[in-house]
Length: 432
Image (tube, rainbow, N blue to C red; front, top):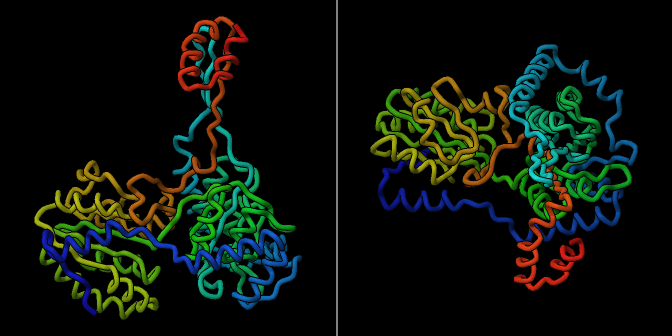
């Protein structure tokens, strides 16, 4: 297979970059219509609709009592995973906790001449987490459980609810259950797909209504999140996974190759880009990709992603590489250049940054501590990674003394009358 190789500046490179910069995911009207129909049924029929859709799309027939995971299932899950995996889960939770506990916003107030102003920081009461199960529920996204549940727990959310599609034997993967229990999830339900999003948004006889829904999913799940976002909080509208690697002649071409493929194997629409100042690196990576693809069980997915959207872009200098990177605003940015830390100030737009040769993006996915729920589709221009703050509300408060009101009343009355809102003005005048 041949990955796209472009020299910047050139017409071909400009055309490709324009397409990538404007890569906002479209939601086909046909899919949106179908998902809306599912939402209406869940809203009207509750659990019955969840059971029906789970059987129709997943081929699994559950009854109402089987929707919720019981304590005995969680206890059994601990016996089904290795002590080494349990230890890895605990370490990941510990590191994510440590990172996300830094700089949490605090309530505050100021008092000046009879005026009290302030802001209360309060967590949402209930958070819903959507955890994909992969094909047949056999690709458990343990890391996503940790990355969504731990920040919610740190924020002080009263009830954390998790949904995930069941496997053929009506169970959830034991590693998912263990991770959820260790991370502080309160309730777990065997429901997936867009119908689970509507269940969390509306509530059913069994599933509670939540205040915010977080976690990735396919286009149907993402469409459902978009549809409910007008009356329940969501983390972000996410598109396919992305990585952009900036490399100079000191970079290791094998490391680059596998980091490009690590993102490409997620989805046929994943975005993997290398921007380099070295012709030698570009050539070696181009030659290594076909060899590396043969080693991966998800090689066909990665190959499809690289052919559709992947590229190697050659530029004259590092400054140009960062200029293009900021236009693209990638989800993951790897900087594989000499003295990589020196270039950190050049980054304006990126979901997360991985500095140096020995910081593969996979470390951020699982263990390092920063969150892996990140803005895609160029949203890094204005959006941030998931954090404990996403589960917090800022509530302003104010209190005036009689003398303070009298001092500022004239200006408020003038502004209210200028806006032609006489009762606003009267509400102040009557107190004088």
